[in-house]
Image 1 (tube, helix red, strand yellow):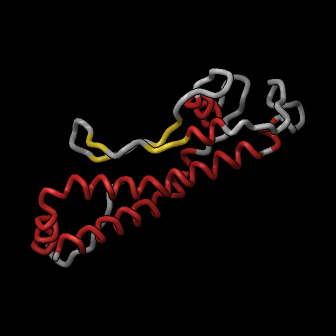
Image 2: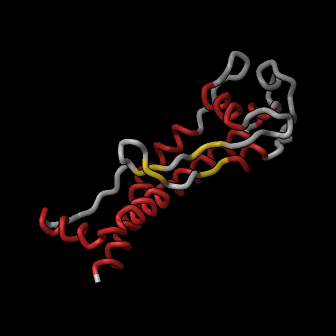
Length: 159
């Protein structure tokens, strides 16, 4: 995702960016983090909806697709493990941060594996996508937040 900034001319754009100077990496990291927050919020909403869905929780007909039903008793480990990494720069000079699942649940199963199984499905569990739809829903808002962050930084350093 890239933030957009409305400028009247190329010279004005160069002048705005030159005022950032050595603060440009900090501004970029701050903007990337601002854009990641709405995406993570949407992912969390989708995950919570999946977990509360009776068909997924094992309350539907036939249990959780052949797996022993857990009767809707979610431990919350998967939701709590969702997080955002600090913004950084990759080998190509692109600023980014990652939204993902860390750690293990109470039974020692990696939370990232559980999320992947829910998103893509397994041989015993039908897929219940929540990440890709959340990213699609939040993309516009994330770009707006990144733009606001950059605009706020430009106002600070323009003086």
